[in-house]
Image (cartoon, rainbow, N blue to C red; front, side, top):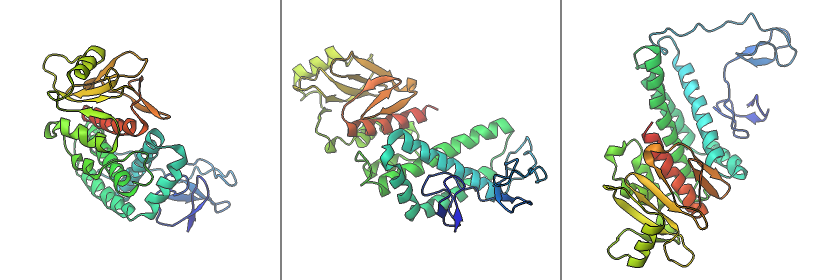
Amino acid sequence: MKNCRSCHQAIPDNARFCPYCGKSVIETTVTCPSCGEENDLDEKNCLHCGFALLGKKQQAPPPKNDIFENSSTESTEQEIADRFSLAFERRLAEEHAPKLHGEYIERFYKSDFRKSVDFRIQQLAEELRRLSGVREELEIKKNKLLKPALEELIDYFIVQYCADLNEAHFPEYILKYQGLSRDKVHLAQMALDYLDFEHEDESLYTDFVTMPSHKLKNAAQSFLKPKKGETIYFICDLSVLGSCKDGFAMTNDCLYWKMPFEKAQRVYFKNLEEIKRQEDWITINGIFFNANKSLNLKLMRLLKKLRDWKE
């Protein structure tokens, strides 16, 4: 056993991050010659006695033509593990109730999924080491490889291992969209899969021939004003009396909505920037949206997926 250098809890020797505080575990340290205390490699002075650690060996900067050329597989894996830990912390902070963060971390650490993460990290490390090009190009390639790969690992864990912790029902079949680009996806079906209206009480309309004409008219007059060529995927009625004057709708290019006592809003997918949880509602590019707590969280996941595709 060893102690986490952040919260000082006892953790297993092979832990990549602390199951108590979630911080990445730095596995390589330097021993203070004065008191014997272990310190992180980038510490200038011993954390225990203050002894100057200026004589420690510094790593040489990577060559400009290939940032992975002389780096060890172990150090590359550690970098990816650190990125995964940060991405996991960010996901919890952005989308899950703070009181549940510890349970998610403990669930991850105790599950067999961490072995899958370790294996995937090894695969990604090998893929990174095979990249070539100048330094700037490599950084872009590295980010394009790592960001979606790590986010998909987190998606899989949240869906498959945390159904009882999640505040919304995320169906397993949304995982089939992992690794796909937008041009390979039927966007209307993907939207319905992510939003999973079968587990919601709101009225949904996808067939506008059979939809009551007065509701369709109300939606069109109130908030749904697509441009020529847009295909309407669905309309969700959020009005108290079922008039469809309040609600939201999605097309192939845009999300339209109107909340009670608020003005109509729209955001085109190409302009998506920040989708943020605010207690039980969300904001989309800073604009208030509130269907219900469950739908809000599922819509957040869908919109983040669409946003990441345009990056």
